[in-house]
Length: 373
Image (tube, rainbow, N blue to C red):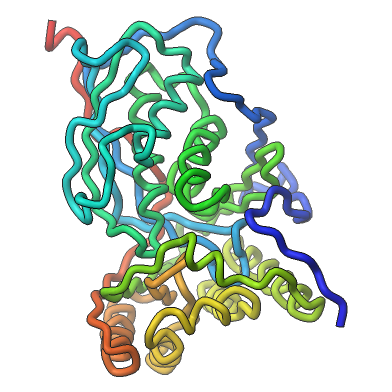
């Protein structure tokens, strides 16, 4: 059998280009491979606000056959970052003053070892910020190790917050690169969480060196719901990546490639049923990870039996994600999946039904400078 060597994390992906003339897809190219402390802006910008608050959504990475190159953002779940100009913080530096929410005891306040802190520092480097210090507060809406892009949400919210505080000088490509710096230190060099967290919608990572991102537009007139079922079980990304095969047989490579192509086509056509079918079809990653999550096989079967168009592991897990085009039906599917987690894996679980987040990370509040003068 022909074999294809696999050495994660992926740095380059040979995916056919999508035409810029296609209104359903937009390509973002960024030739930057930024070394540490390299400024993108030629003149250090001044803050335009005294403080800002940003939100970044949860994400579903891989989407079945799209390991490390496909992901999407989901509405209503995510992390918050509040950022302020602080004269008590050394100029050019960021201090994390407060962390609240899920699993806060496991997170460091040292910005060099915190996802939000790392991303904030990278954006400050890109902007060339040397004259002011910043204090950062992180509110974790996402649990750690959930498969919903917890680290990416923190990084994305921090990147958007710093950029917004200084007038939004950087584009999405640079912000994704800043988030990648954070992801690289925590879970590996992959953008399938942080890119959709920043950009919203469905994102295809065509290449990493240089970074090329393709936004895939699911038609706004079409309905799509994600049934997210999270068990009380932690699946650290590094551990789940270690379970992956080092080589892939040619038949599985061809199969997964065709299913990833079908998934992209389904997104662009607004075909929720076709999306679900492709999402359920991974023969490379899911078979290795599913046995590590108690009850996952039974949960997938329960979702399909209840009417879901498809079901797979969200990111590295343990959250299971199913897709459907009706919210009420999604709630029924979620109930069946929760029951299956208990029956098959002896795990308590919570279900939620969410829409696609088409916006991505954004500022949700700000305080003008003159209010504190």
